[in-house]
Image (cartoon, rainbow, N blue to C red; front, top):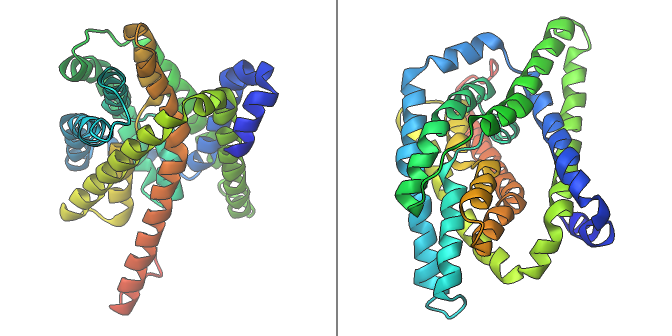
Length: 327
């Protein structure tokens, strides 16, 4: 993050190129290693699992946007404005920006978080496929309901993301497994690709802060406010998704996939909506631009917390005498 901000000032001529090419390349090599672990049959099962899909859709579209809007309103007007840290005009634009960050579920990096936290990646892929279809209709309705703005989501924008960050890594992963899955060294290859995933993650973080880092320094007062709100709704949404899944008797991997699918947001759609519908309000656009800068470190924090939870579950099972040798 620090290196990216430094490069945004000292190598600003390359910022546009890094944003256009560097970020998509980094995202591809973050997602592709995860896709080598996926079995197509498992994706098919996930696509047809009505109970899990129903819970995910309900939380993602009936609960998450309204919860995000409520938390944003509470912090902006109940805390920041009362403390004299922000005026009503900027606060209103900040609220709309946060609402835009909360209306559309993620259809790209959510698979990386699910994989890193040892969730059910095949189920996560099926969720991404369904969300890419549902949000074309649901997002304009939610934006109108919460931000009182009419808009039409261009399906080509979502199709581009799906092709870049779902279809192409999935095809590459399936092809890799088909060619090399029965080779003696396939396990070593998966370990190598795990290292590639981490390197790509670091590269993507640098690229995102390189392309947008100067905006952070110019608006530090806004960054920490957005950060507090985003940390709150990521944490609350994830816990809501995970704990409600566990209450529905789903196991750790499935519940983790639902938790990340419910909490991760689609910042590409948010930025696109802000530019098209709110071009006259600079703080709306700035808020949606800050979103992706903060999402990666905040989601990595959730991954770390979830891995700690997974370890506790395993230790509890061992203490209860459960055989974990098959998992």
